[in-house]
Length: 155
Image 1: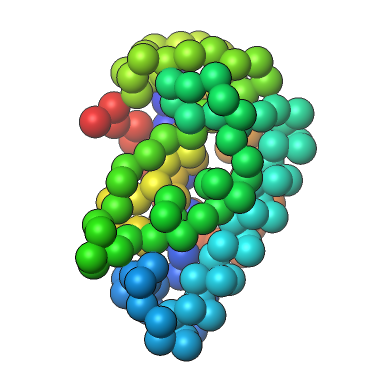
Image 2: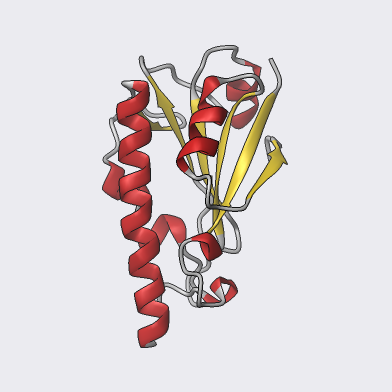
């Protein structure tokens, strides 16, 4: 089954801030304020998604449960000029299935969801099966956001 995604840009959360400049090491008050808004929003959104799906979240290839706070964190969501960003993927699913790679997740037909960070730290990506009910739930939940559909690439 084909996987597609939605890009959730942080500019939807911080309406009066250029989110292209979010650097987790920047202590500027406006930057800190925006990052706090994104962190708070991410925690609430991911918690609601997990509750709606009655699911849990794991790293792509680890059976260890991950807390929402680990995903809604500066290290995952934002770029650092000093340390760069580590691209990471988390899987939301009812029952744990281990995936050796992104390609392995892509080939599965189950209803799991993949959450990935952005190499520039300006958005998060949510991937799912093309005709999944998750898409409609996200679009309804984020009806005031501008959401972009993105193809899944197992890179």
